[in-house]
Image (cartoon, rainbow, N blue to C red; front, top):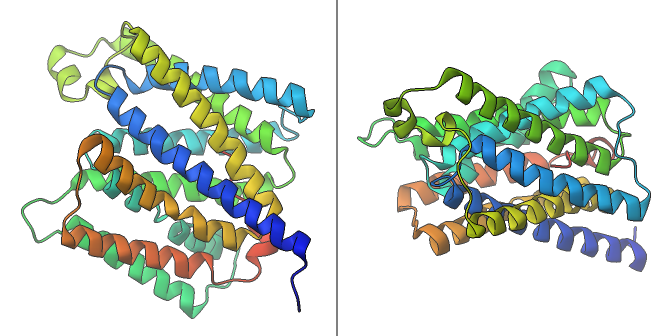
Length: 316
């Protein structure tokens, strides 16, 4: 069976879009990590997503896409799961190298396979099981449980991967026919809500200076913003909106299993951003663990031809 030029063009466009999207995601995560010294997670959520939301409203006005979901409950539940995923992931960035956190979070295809097998009774092939065990081995190698530098904070991006995987399955089963801009816009509404609630809780609970100093990213409220921080948030909002649209559109116009494979280039971009912004250089053991996790994910996402019809990526 031959591939038509039109189909080839759409695959090329989809691949370029996902590469652009994951590059913006890695850069955005690096900016979050940089900003975590001066701003709380809740403040970043509130400011960044307000800017991203305004941009998505403008885009919807230009394209005629819907901003409000057809099914409020399922889209709302999906939003909650993704917000929890990003809370866990961004918190991890204050303790872990960007590259290590990225690889741990990209265990999500492994969780997705297991959740789909249990909840949707989907068949798990031998190749997928190999991927699951390889991914587990990679995480163990990175954790280094027999060494002196056990990274317990690695639990956070793995927890983020679990929440993300539940959201993926939910998107595929309950939100498949929602407008991608509606999914993206409602996600940013969720981030704004989480930011406002987080700021309110910090103000209400007034955590002591000792707790605030240990985990200032979580236990501090609103901080005065310099012009430099405002520009950082504008850039972050633009990156977040671009990522939302890029991911959603790439999965719409090209086969999902191809796009999911290139989605893993986020790890390479995260390593690059970690080196450029923070001079982070994983050691040999960590590189081995990364290769195992990435290889496991690729085994999982390229396994099933049915992904063409079934898999939908959440617009984030």
